[in-house]
Amino acid sequence: MRTKQELTEAIRSERRAALVVNARSRRGRQLYEDAHAKLVAAGFKLLGAYAVERDLEKSLADAIAQGPDLLVAGGGDGTMSTAGRMLAHRDIALGLLPLGTTNNFARTVGIQPGLDESIGTLVDGAVIDVDLGIAGDMPFTNHVGAGLSAEIMISAPSRLKRFAGRLAYPITALGLLTRHRPLRVTVRAEGRELVFQTHQVYVANGGFHAGRPITADAHADDRLLVAYPVGDATRRGLLRETARNALTGHRRTLHERPFLAVSELWLETDRPAHVEVDGEPCGQTPLRIALDANALRIMAPPGTPDH
Image 1 (cartoon, rainbow, N blue to C red):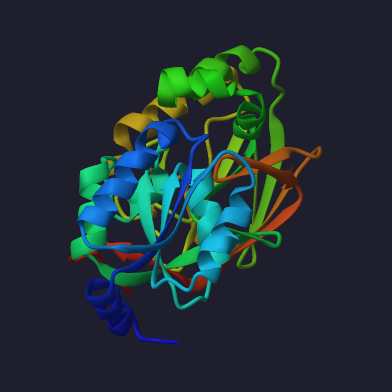
Image 2: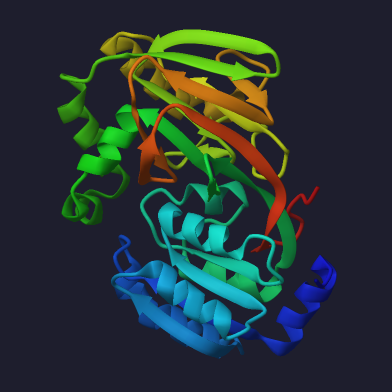
């Protein structure tokens, strides 16, 4: 496998790439043609280009089989998580075109939504490696959610997500919250056991959730998972803590309550609870969650920390 510097130089000089855009994401269909044209204008040789309505994994596998140095994936966090899983430990860098609703993983690595900005990163950036989380046997880029968020992901209509963007999730949540029962959650990690009641618990690998910072010092290359409940057993507590997280996440640190920053944990609930991984339904609790350090190579903006 080439070094990160060698792969960066190959991308800059050879411009061998493949493009996969999830046309089901919020802006994927309308921006596929623009992305294709802008990549070609930037000098990239597209060995394959796919606008995907279904079977994203097959299109990604086909793109990988073309042997590019850079696989450019356009879509939301679910698309990035799928692409990241398939590119783990490969000598191919992932290029991110954040075209989804919240784009948490892209924000974590400093790539802001906007086609021109993200393609600029592919042209001028450098290859870095970041951690992947492992939920059971499922690699992920950004987070695992158990409780209400998984119910929301299962229930949020695609049409509402396209129309309302990130507001689709709180709108759906308000409808579900009136009948959602709190969970008794047990987290075991590094010889400790934490027990609490909540409607929602997250385990994050990245630094953003719902398009907002989790804390000022959480990111995808720190060898840490961050577990935290959102509120207590009351619905009012959930709403209050959700608002607090959105407003003050950029000022909080991993050393504050309620965050638990570890490299591996075991998550249990008093009854089987649905789990979502980067916005996609993925089984139930109980669940082991761990890290695969420096498992994924991505193109990031110049100066992005790389540990």
